[in-house]
Amino acid sequence: QVQVEESGGGLVQVGGSLRLSCKVRGNIFSIETMVWYRQAPGKLRELVASITSGGTTTYADSVKGRSTISRDNSKHTMDLRMDSLKTEDTAVYYCNAAGVRRTWSVSDYWGQGTQVTVSS
Picture 1: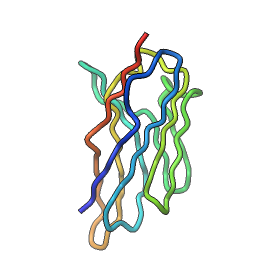
Picture 2: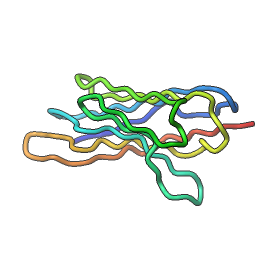
Picture 3: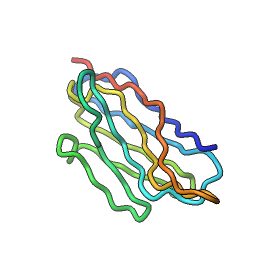
Picture 4: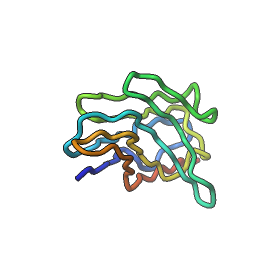
C-alpha cells in the first residue's frame, strides 16, 4: 500500500516563508514526477510546482521566482519552499506522486492535503 503524507502547512504572515514536505511511503521502486497542487476556496485545483526524477522543475507563474522545489529520490520525499508569501497563496496544498513504480504497477497517488493560510 502506498501513502502520501504532507506536512508543513499552517498560518503564516504576509511576506513570510514556509516549507512544505511530502513523503511517499510504501514498497516503491521509483517515482517519475512529484507535484504540488493547491486549491483555494471556490477555485479549481492548480499546479504549483513539479519536479521529475531527473531534477527537471516547473513552476506556476504565480510562484515563480519565490519558490524552490526539491526532492530526494532515495527517500521518496519532496520539499517546496515558498518565500514572500501573499494572501493569494492561501489554499490547501496537495502532494501528487505520479508514475509510482511498484512490483506490478505504475500509478498515481495523492495526499490528503495541508492547509496554508497567509494572513495580513
